[in-house]
Image (cartoon, rainbow, N blue to C red; front, side, top):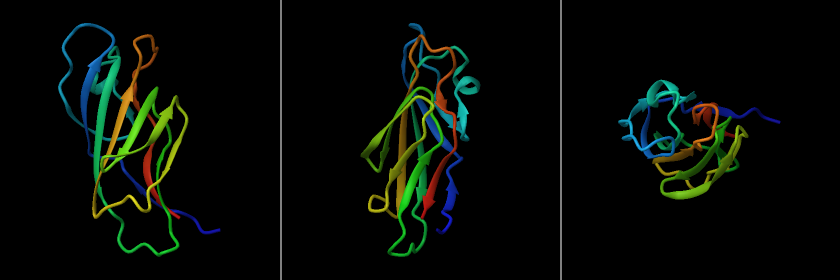
Amino acid sequence: MREAHVIRLRGPWEYAPRARFDSAGPLPPAGKVRMPCDWADTLGRDFRGRVCYLRRFGRPGFPEPYEQMWIVFSGVRTHATVSLNGQFLGEIAGDEPGNFEVTDRLDFRNLLEVVVEQPSEAAEPGGIIGEVRLEIE
C-alpha cells in the first residue's frame, strides 16, 4: 500500500465569531490564526459560542486518475460542521477525527468552511484543536 501525500492546512485561517453563548457581551472581533489551536488566545479562555473558520487553498496539481483526495481533521472541540465551496461535507463531534472524501468536489481555488460550536457549559475553549490536512491517496 502506498503512503498518502499530505498537505497541511495550517494557515492562515480567517475566523469570525458568529454567536456568543457565555454572556450577553459583544462578540470579539474577527481575525486570522494558524491551526491547530483552541480559541483561548484569540477569543479568550471563557468564550463559548459559535465561530466560523475559513481556509482558502488551491487544488493539488495533476493528480492521477486513480487517486482520491480527502480533507482530514484530527480533532475539533466540541462540534463542527464542514463545507467545501459551499457544499456541506458533514459534521465532526467531540475530539473525534473527521474524514471527508473531496476528489470530485475540488475546484482550482477552494474555500473550506468550518463552523465550530462550544456550549456554555463546556470546561475548555473550543476550536480546531487537531491538524487539518488534505491527503492524496
